[in-house]
Length: 317
Image 1: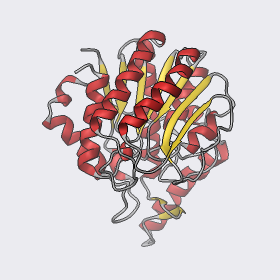
Image 2: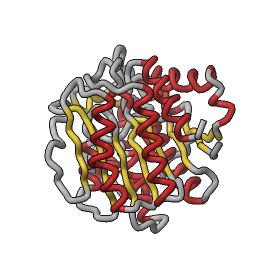
Image 3: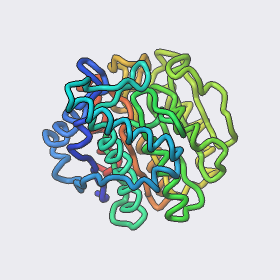
């Protein structure tokens, strides 16, 4: 068994966007409860997510955008204390409460701390059970439940702070990671490989905007076996040619066949297979170094089971 870290923080549960919203604190409860019930919590290295430094967030995001998020959280807190509303809408399906900024800092901080630990050799790989998710957050805009691009920030951090030369990002969420793409497109030090349902929110990604993108848009009801064939044919040759020194994963489990958010046909076995395939690449080229961050996954039982399968593959269990 290798050393696999598990990063989370109670602050990530304090962010919520209103009753009935699918991106809810119960997502983390389902995952953490599953870790306990299955005994995985006892074999993973549990670590608390720190707050991300602003200077590191600004490797991927506009400084004024970051300041506006921080200011909005302060404003919500003041208004709520004065009897005002608890939430502020950022876009039609994304809202902030007074804790959103802190939760977002923890989510990004988990990715950064995991990057440090994996590069230092303290861990071989890590999973960050954090929210809000990140892969729709662009350089200067919050959208799609996302505020800070956790994986994009960590990828930039590995390049800028640790002087890596090449890092890969893998995104298997049902939605296209347009924010990660916006931040990384054109940076030859990065390679982003993804599949996603199309046409579907955010209604882009069907054309690669830069040479370092390998987008695989697939129609609704695509099965896991078909995804596996596409990965072998399209991702693997690109990754082998790129020889990444580290791999980051945007782990979205809403591509599960039982998730109510999308219409793809993956199962827990498919997530385990994808993870093991990524691990093979990481062991050949990246010293095994992988940092994975939770993105989507909104139907709680398949979410928890899928995360378990993903972590078991990461940890060689």
